[in-house]
Image (cartoon, rainbow, N blue to C red; front, side, top):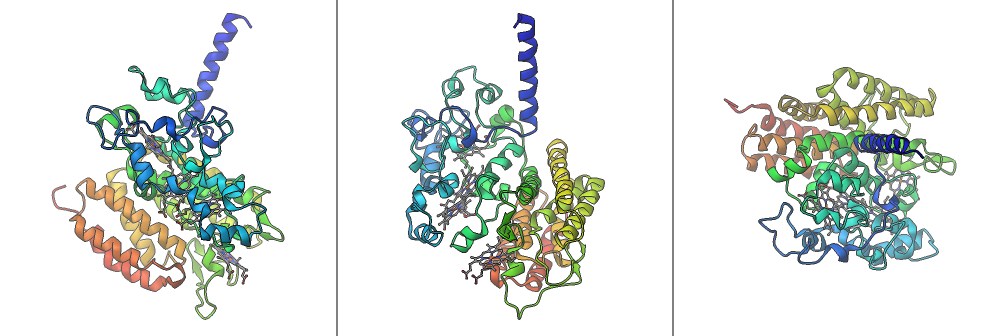
Length: 446
Ligand code: HEC
Ligand code: HEC
Ligand code: HEC
Ligand code: HEC
């Protein structure tokens, strides 16, 4: 190749890489062909294994200690050796025990394409399971002139970028075409899964601090944007699975986990069908409905930041529900919803969420529920997690009264969600009515 052509190619590749970064299309850590070095490589006391966080360093340096002591990902593999996992494996008649079965290891450990000898699957989901195999960035990321952009170019996974983070977390907390907790696995004893990115980022617990220095290196991403983008990517992921021929079906039936669990799993004496569903006129009684908890949240978000896009999304979901009920082309309708969810994720990433949006969203989360929008447990559960994120951000901005009364209010909401099968929509509506005054009154002078 002539030098000029090489240069042009390099420039084009650079552009492509940049585009991939922006589109959140990076290779997930377990698909990367870079070598995974192992948690032990990051754990030294001079690196990320310091007992207390350092003052002079831009990052805490105690990430390993936080992870190994407090983060459930450090124990995700060990869990496969317990009684519950043994029972799941036995119920599924897996040829090998859970801790040796790919169907479990895929999410309960980091199983890289290219492991170094020091990498141990038994470490569970280690640093490189989220930050990407370290082969190319390990040396460069501690150099005095290291930059975040430079590290990304060397294969560090961009977990700071909400679109990329959502794909990463949801690849295990919802699943992909390659790894998925099917209804069979759930019926064998696996817990039901739910995810909300902002809540779970805080629950993990976070081993990073978004301070001035962090913002200078990586930019400021507020919690509400993380919640909103997480919802858009979750809807897209659900539709991907619905459309995937390897995942969308199980024998004669569709994959049941894509539908609302409690549409089937509730006592017959407790009839719940209503003439109006969450997306307008309900489909006929007796039909299985998609789990629309993510769609409910995305509708609410879009109404605040881009109402016309929100309206198109609502229409697409209504059409999808009709197609699920047998009226319309399911594949086409699913494609429409997927395209709009992708557009929504990009839109939220680019425009963000304003203060005014925030209060309107908090109120909409409450009012949608009071109007009967959370007929299903999954919707109420997402709404409660969302209220936690939005209210927390509003409080940090000084826009809401005392933390104590807010926390008490949120605890009252969650108390209605402790047992999914005991969920009573009318009771949750009452809890929302009691919660409303906490978010309805703006503080004077702010
Ligand atoms: C698609 C990814 C995925 C797959 C595949 C998967 N799991 Fe899980 N598993 C999870 C996630 C995520 C959680 C945590 C759910 C939560 O707490 O929100 C979990 C939770 C569990 C729990 C409950 C943990 C607790 O604290 O009570 C057990 C037990 C378990 N998994 C066993 C298994 C076994 C056995 C297999 C293989 C048959 C398996 N899992 C396959 C993602 C997966
Ligand atoms: C379950 C996923 C996950 C695991 C496992 C994980 N991290 Fe992180 N880590 C994150 C996320 C999300 C962030 C915040 C976004 C960002 O800055 O990339 C982060 C941020 C960081 C930061 C950046 C702090 C800053 O100020 O820029 C460091 C350093 C870090 N992690 C080190 C580690 C180390 C060391 C381990 C293993 C002991 C580890 N992480 C394990 C998800 C993970
Ligand atoms: C490689 C798969 C994988 C990835 C990637 C992953 N997780 Fe997990 N996560 C799990 C599994 C498996 C568990 C269950 C562990 C257990 O219960 O001990 C879990 C548990 C958790 C829990 C504890 C939940 C509970 O019920 O206490 C939180 C919080 C969490 N993950 C947050 C995140 C976030 C945030 C991200 C993205 C930055 C992420 N996870 C990425 C597999 C993963
Ligand atoms: C279309 C209806 C339908 C949907 C939707 C559905 N299930 Fe099921 N589920 C069933 C049927 C049918 C069985 C088998 C019942 C039996 O064996 O008695 C079952 C069995 C189970 C079992 C085992 C119960 C037992 O007695 O052995 C669990 C656990 C379970 N489902 C969880 C879930 C979860 C979690 C979801 C949502 C993510 C879900 N199901 C969605 C119909 C459904």
